[in-house]
Length: 147
Image (cartoon, rainbow, N blue to C red; front, side, top):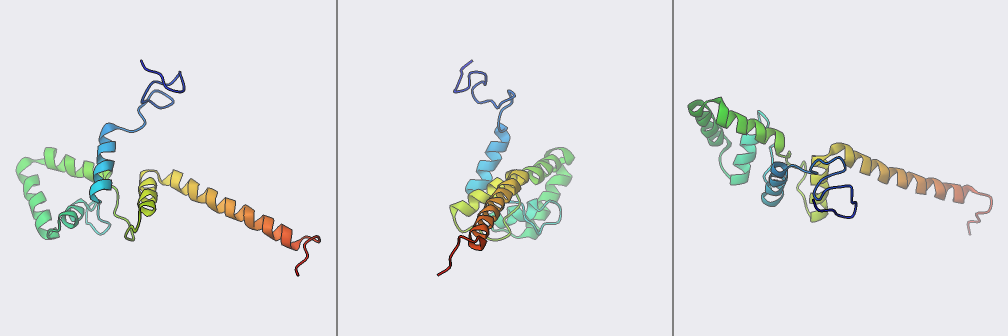
C-alpha cells in the first residue's frame, strides 16, 4: 500500500477509502468532453438518439429507426440497457454554445455536480454582496468626503 501526503489515505482513494470517480464515469466524461457528445434537450426519451444523430450529423428519424430495429431484434437486454445507461450518464447539451475553455470547464463542473456549482455561484455573489456593503458603509460614513 502506497501512501501520499496524508498517510491515512490510500493512493487513489478518497477520505473514506472509496475511489474519487468511477473508472467508467471517467471514461464517459472524457468521451463527452473530447468529442462533444451530449444528450439532446429536445429528444423524446432522454434525448440519446437525437444526441447521437446531431453528433454524427445524421437524420434523427433514421437514428431512431436503427435503434428501434436493434431493440426489437436483440431484445431489451443489450440495446435497452445501453440506452438507459447512456441516458443516465451522458451530460445534457449546453443551452448556449460554449465559446471558450472556461465556459466548457464551468459547464462540465455544473453538469457533474449541480449542488457544488450552485454553492460556488452563491459564494461569489455573497462575496460581491459583502464588498458592496463595505463600499456603502464607507461612502455613507461621516468621515467620507466626496470632492
